[in-house]
Length: 339
Ligand SMILES: NC(=O)c1ccc[n+]([C@@H]2O[C@H](COP(=O)([O-])OP(=O)(O)OC[C@H]3O[C@@H](n4cnc5c(N)ncnc54)[C@H](OP(=O)(O)O)[C@@H]3O)[C@@H](O)[C@H]2O)c1
Ligand SMILES: [Zn+2]
Image (cartoon, rainbow, N blue to C red; front, side):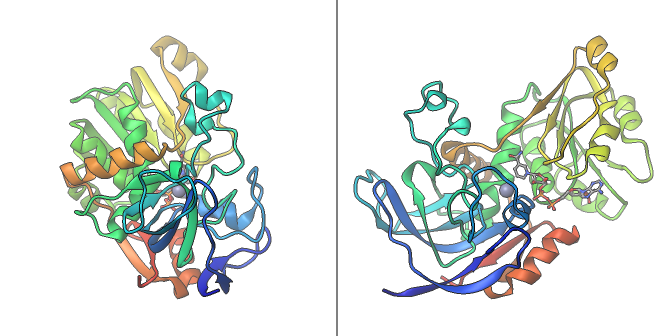
C-alpha cells in the first residue's frame, strides 16, 4: 500500500506533526480526493486545541479542501474520478435523521459530518469524504483560489444571502481576516452599502479595494456611533474572534437590524432594551452545506470575488498556522501539496 504525507495533531494542544500515513481507501458512499490545496481557517484551532464535540485523535485538520477525485467507493453515484471537487466544514449529511428530513442538513446527527473534526481533513496529500460533502469546482478557479471559498467563502456568502439585507442597504462587516475580506467582497457584489470595520488604519486601502464603500477604524473611532451616523446597519456580519469587539458594534444596528454572529466567541451580553425598541435581533450563522459551497464558487466566478491568499507548501504547515494566528496574513493562508 502506498503512503502519503499528512499533518496530524495527536492530542489536544499537541503540535502539527508531519507524518507518513497509508493512503486511505474510500468506504461505501465515500470518495478519495487527491488534495491540491487546503485553506488554514481560524476554526482549525479547534482541532489543534481540542474540546469540540465529536473530535477524536489523532486527527488531520483542514476543512477548506480542493482536489481531484481519484477513487470512488461502492454506491457512489454521479461523482467520478477526475472531477475537481471541494470539501468544507460541513462534512456531509445522512439524509435520514430527523434534522435532514426537515431540510436542516447543517444539524445532521450523523457522526461523520464535520471535516477535520469528526474525520480526517485536508492537511494531507489525500483524504476521503462522503459524496454528500462534495462541491463541484468550476474550471475558472485554481485550487488555491477555490479552497478558502469552502469555509470562509460559503459562511459569509450564505450568511449574507440568508440575511434580511436588500440591495442598497447598509451592511457592516466586522473584522478583516480570512472570513471578513471575503464578506466585504460578497456584500459589495450583492449591491449592499458595505462598511468594513477593522483595527487600525492600515487595512483601509485594502478594504476599499475589496469593495468597501466606507471604512471604520475601530481603534480610532467608536464603531457603533459611526454606523449610526451612516443611518444604522441593517446587518452586521461579525467575523471577529473577540466578544468585546462584537459588543462594541451592537449599538450600530438600525431599525429591524440583525447582528449575525459568525466568529466563534463564548458568551455575549446584548443591549436588550435597544433590541426591543429597535425590533432588532442577534442571530448565529453556521457555515453551509455542499450545495451552498457550490453556489458560492459559482457566484465568485460570476462576480469576480477572489480570496487574497498567501500560499505555503504542506511541509511548512507550522509556519503557515502561526501566520494565520498572527493576524498578519493578507488574508487567507493556503497550504498546497504540489499535486
Ligand atoms: N460561523 C461559522 O460557520 C464559522 C466559519 C468559519 C470560521 N468561523 C470563525 O470565524 C472567526 C474568524 O475566522 P477567520 O478564519 O476569518 O480568522 P482570521 O483570519 O484569523 O481573522 C480573525 C479576525 O478576528 C479579529 N480579531 C482577532 N483578535 C481580535 C481582538 N482581540 N479584537 C478584535 N478583533 C480581533 C481580526 O480583526 P482585525 O481585522 O481587526 O485584525 C480578524 O478580522 C473565527 O472565530 C472562526 O472560528 C466561524
Ligand atoms: Zn473554517
